[in-house]
Image (tube, rainbow, N blue to C red):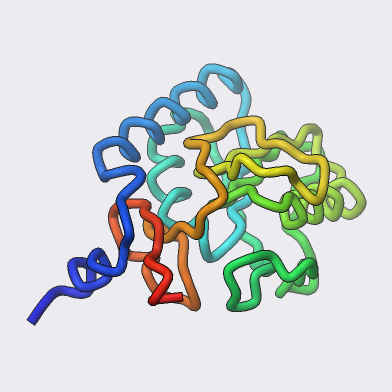
Length: 185
């Protein structure tokens, strides 16, 4: 019987980034963030659930006093593209008044989710500063004008899974990032 990871790996058309490549890039991002915020503390707000794996690895690479918060936001609602509606699954945002904040997400595509989170933070939470970090940034025209301050990798307009990214809740546990075969969508 195949393990869940190898079984799911067979659902990939191709692997874009393997474990070593991901680990090295996340370490580089952690070093860059550490250097930029040296002498300060930082509050990470992870957009769950997609950023969970990325967040766990990245925060271990950031050598700063660090607080961790999370929010649950959805815009895909089970499909392969943003629905156009961003839904916040909690009644209030984390208390980050006067803090340097970094919003952490798995992928930046349409820009709707990142823009909505930044807007809600600015309106309700009064952080000192807000920056953004994403594991992946799709090289597409965004619906909303927003770019990430830190980007792990740029990818084309393909449906990717693995390393926290999912399709209908599956494939998050793949240790690689790959393009899902059409027959599994």
